[in-house]
Image (cartoon, rainbow, N blue to C red; front, top):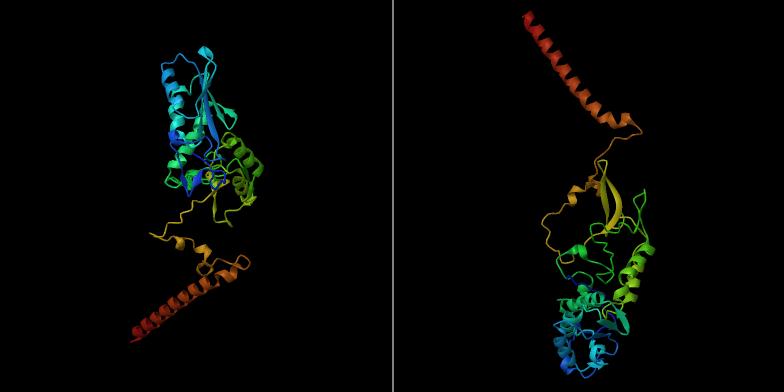
Length: 312
């Protein structure tokens, strides 16, 4: 499993001073230690699996355990705090694939696979060196999985190889027109199953979506660059990509600024004046005229000297 997660700064999050508090299950006085934190309820029935007895034993150790019915109709239920991932995983690995097992998050029933994926993601966030950076994808050495919205699952990665390709139109004048409605639709669809994550803050994601420019011209906005494709021996711009920020880079091995002389007016190479071709070539013709005159003078002098020696 390759877990990933969401936004930070949510007032509903169980985060305290950037750390995830995990309360040992046996010492938890009640289910809702954090009143605003979601709870996870796992309910399962009798099974012919060899793990059934062990699953019941583990479930009964939890102070929130309850059961209803009897015999083949018995139902076992355990409710966990959202951040009790290790305890949830222990029971999930035994009953998660049983047909009669249900997962409920704050009263909303979810498929086991989706519920566990988000729980795993949140658990990885808690274990991350910097939980807040984890949600933005900035906790690893790969710059190209970063996102500006605050959730790895948002599906929009402006730093990726394709940038915003598919989320706007490249005009003939080199300006990319962003299709915000399509971006909002994509993000909303991708985050639908993650809305109950304590680290997800939909309002902040909405604010960051609004900060995306309506139009992007990389020639004027240096934070962006063109995404190009080769077509008939030409690099054609098809979208834009956000440049990776490297705030910690201080040591410059080589500066290539000198290669871009056109950006410095004082170093521009003089070009011919298209309006007056004669004026543009006057210096070149005057130089060649002087050379011809000098050679002619030398030849005349040699002729005179030779003629004079002949007379002697």
